Image 1 (cartoon, one colour):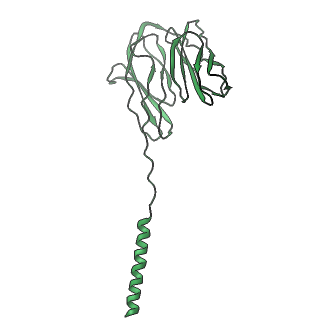
Image 2 (spheres, helix red, strand yellow):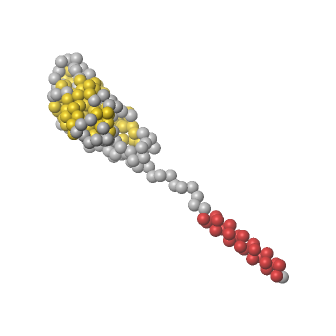
Image 3 (spheres, helix red, strand yellow):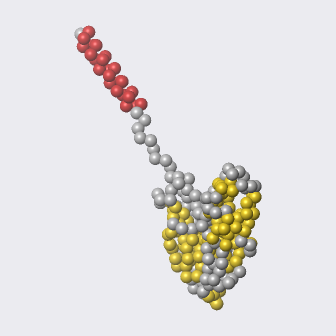
Length: 232
């Protein structure tokens, strides 16, 4: 009888021990929550702008994704602000897209970001613009090229002169927007100035990113590459 009781107690101990091990098993960790990309900010055409050129390059700022996922963008162009009549709806991995439009039309446009897990941001605000009836073909400026500091350069000093070059085959006067900062893509620092250089204040042991957008007086826009340099 004692032997039977002993084996019963031993079996219960083994069963309870296994149960504890099963309950102590944490199991697979849950997948991290996917974050929605930030809403894109529209740059060009500006809201309520009158465009003398019907071939336009649309431009918007890049979105950010907390998970580091690749981002694509959907741009919609319509003839009403409710987007019931969408003329173009394109998905692209770039932050620019050129379209041939009609003359003498009021357009509306918006952009949203989509990450690689198909999580979508809200749409941007809606911008409207108008193409003049006599709008014509305008050659956009050549993309700005860097003069100094060269990409990857290490520079010294508290103030650095950013220098670049851009020309226009039509001979149109150019204005520039400068994007500059410690993040990539950089943020807008100054806009609509006519000289091709700009002084910026910097801190030591820091990497800076910058980009120049060249604009002619017929709404032609050329967006330069993002360059970078470090400070000693």
